Image (cartoon, rainbow over all chains, first blue to last red; front, side):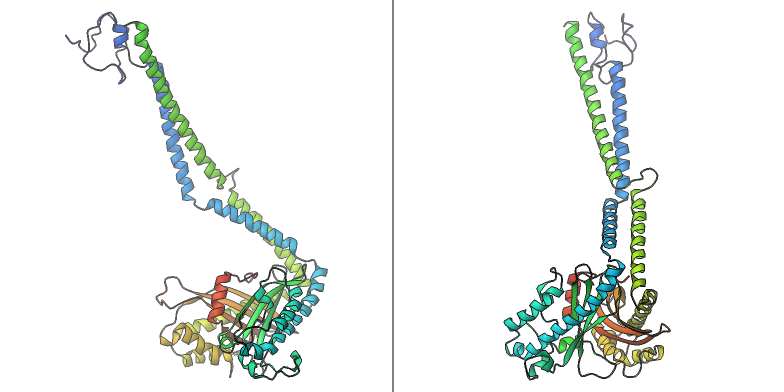
Length: 259
Length: 234
């Protein structure tokens, strides 16, 4: 006969509270082994410890999800701090690389001289234009290399090879008589001019701009055919970071060169 | 069955339960530690001040020190007024923007020429900016076929190139990008090289502009926003 609830027979010491871990199935009348059969599968103490740990684990998961969510709400923060650190390092390095006043004043004179020299050498490429045009755009190697060798010391070693070639040649120069073979005797339709105002750029370099201007132009109204911009690095006594470009008008009058 | 044989499964079940709960607790601890580490390494508040704020302050300090050194250098250069150059740069930028904006918002070249001629003394008779740049720019950007694309000045570099007494001359390179989501599909980034000079009164005395060729445009785009070895205007 099945026992009624609360009817545990003689064994009143057995806890009435049963757990899911207690033995399943119809209750049996307590027998000789009633203590072992009716006792919960785990003790109360174990159950409490386990429940506490489970609750702790649950709290841990909830907390980590919350923290993770907070991190997700601030995406790119690590990248931002890394970016800021890099900018700080760059600015400090830039400050360190600034020349002192004496160096800057001496550097200005050197920059003016070097900029004029570069313009003169770029103008030297112009007398090669008739040969370049007749040769399908190829540079006469020997003469071009001679000019390149003169240009090279004026630029930082990091500049690309194109910087040491002709920046801009005027197509109409192909009809100009070669003259004596010297640059000064070649009546080019354009001229490179260096423009330096002796100021210090924020990177410590002296900004320099070269303009390719037509030699036959109306007074006060130059048409820029091409330009080049760079900065004179006072510490290295060389131009670095050269940018060249042509205007739309200049492009239509340009002599193509195979580099 | 003996009592010992009956208690053995109970002991095993207890151990199993404890082990499972302990493992869950350990894993949750690891999860929490990992999440906390992510947040703190990303600059979570530390000692009341965030790492980002601290770095920003450090950057501002470094930039201020850099600017101080530059100002001292500028002041030492003979004949160049650094403050005036900064003012003139702003004036030149505004002048360029006025020309570009008029070109974009006007439907015909004569109208744009008339407006700019009336607005700016520096664009007088025979000004190439009016007679060559404006028609070419409006044709290239499609302004003559209707409302032109809205191009925003995204970057400009202006260098002082000549100082003669109180007359300062400048050369600049500007990058103009189409507004995002512009209805004009043909809108594209353009570069303009421009020159201008200012007098003692700070007004623009002369101004010329030239659109960069398509080849140059591609090269500048490939070289990056500031160009090779160059830097943005201060």
